[in-house]
Image 1: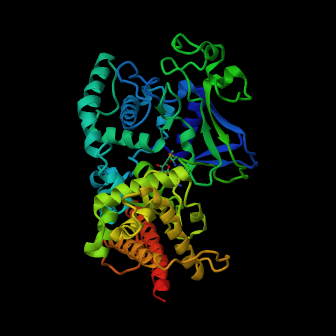
Image 2 (image 1 turned 90 degrees about the vertical axis):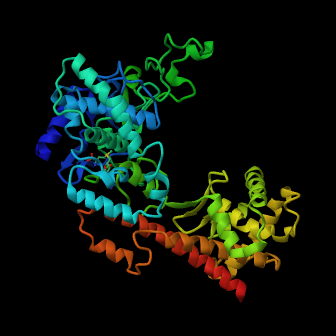
Image 3 (image 1 turned 60 degrees about the vertical axis):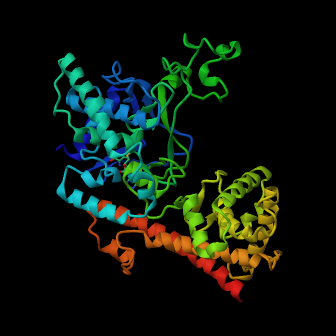
Length: 530
Ligand SMILES: C[S@@+](CC[C@H](N)C(=O)[O-])C[C@H]1O[C@@H](n2cnc3c(N)ncnc32)[C@H](O)[C@@H]1O
């Protein structure tokens, strides 16, 4: 295995030879355990500095790859991930004969530990044990819920693509071109390539689509990032041209008169010829001397998404969120309220009307004064969630309240669901009155009124939510009945058990969101009983 210094030197020489320019104020560092990272040299770098220029012909996309004639280009989504994995795998198999060799030799030699692979890791017995232990811990978490069983990206669909599409095509291509491979193609090699694509590829433009972008992919992720990738997405999907081209038959005369890159966009200060040919990493915050320079892989990414796609988690992630579906929430309310609960159909139809009406009328604005509920940016009725501060989304709040509002249909909501918004606004006022009388917002002026008829509804809502969170907690992690402190278990784990550590970090985060939600609503129940 080459030394970190040799790997870095080979990568940097490849960059020079392939029109990838790196600002001399940056240093690429390679470490055998932590991999590649980018640091500032002994200089401050201001925002809006273009720090890395990557020629469009140097990215490893399906279009640029050796297999460009035989792989159908797909721009984005799961199908693009598979196509790019195949293009990348073909280049990896070519070894030193690949035009990307200097770049490829710097990528991780082992598969990135995505949970998708934890139960079948092939490289090392300890990793397999670690992965299986990690999967036990992921039970009941958002990762298990959304990713481990995801039908479009599970291991079976990746393996099926390999055996039906990738392997036959690789064999044909290598035989036809009389090319030798460094190792024989294998399912494990393809899975490795898939994890590299999942954890490093960028969607660059409408022609190259999902691509491996040398050096842009050397930056680690942080929510407080310094740099981002800038590309002009709207190029011709047929030939990649930024300017008017022969494929523009459908464009209007006005559009044709203008270079494509200026249509609806602000001109870039760089020279036109340069600008057309490069993707750039640009700073968006000041960078201090010697500090690590971070990108963000997505400003709203949760730990669940980071683990599933990139194979790591942050110790604390303020984007974290827990989701439920309609049936789970309704069943919980029904279990709490017993036989007198309104029917599922009634609740479902009034709920839709309520959520649409909140979005249309911009109602429930006073939610901003609540420390228990927040107005979810996505107004769809599927956003039934608790956020990292233990607050519930307005959609979950409405769904929890409705079965109790409808009990005995005391306000005629089923017949005239239009009244529901006004009713919910009144309920919110009552809740804010309670929140303000408690310690939650004690220093704020209390101009809210608790209506006596809202008391039972709020109590029903609170108790259902507490039940919902407690039920989720009781299914969370390896052994929910184990009363040991999870932080102590995490502290005792060897640092090499990376998968188990990440899974446990997810469980600790989810448990703390549920605890904080339960404890604030217990305060509401307590106040109602006083
Ligand atoms: C685009 S690469 C970044 C360069 C990477 N360090 C390398 O060695 O090639 C993404 C991978 O870097 C690692 N990574 C990035 N940001 C991280 C972070 N904040 N904490 C831990 N690992 C991180 C993860 O393994 C991730 O899959």
